[in-house]
Length: 203
Image (cartoon, rainbow, N blue to C red):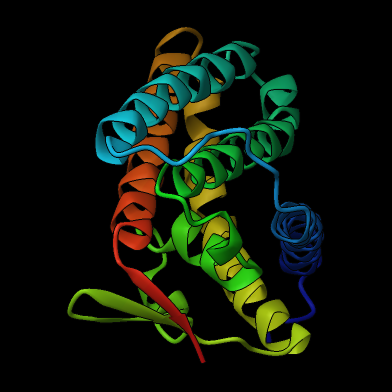
């Protein structure tokens, strides 16, 4: 009965458009795995923690600045914000892999796992299996990766909608958004350390 309501139809369409845009950004970030100039070091853990700290502060600065505009203009900065943060986090993951001497272990599946395990654990659980001191990465088809990314996108759409409300509040909203970007980037880094510090196998 409600499916033909113009407001409901418009809301569903807007959500689909947001999901499509998110999916395109996600797909681009995952497929364009960054290179890293980081060299393997015996102090990989210490170096990785420094990389995480630097990236987290950068993420907070980017998100905080983009969240300063309030109202409709603030909503327009959400997707550019996400794109910038994901690229920053992807570079951090690649650098942590370099510090542990495992640049060749960074695949699309392992990138998805490192970027989104902390936020969508149930979605990425089939990509990487932790088995004691090693992790097994499931090498899937392009379609499998697309399905995982779309599932992640659906979850992120709802998070974006909730997070976007903070952008309506000048200054305070920017602080909240910056704080979350810092936390989110830190969590990605911790997952990357856990991943690259173990023996990595592909199946």
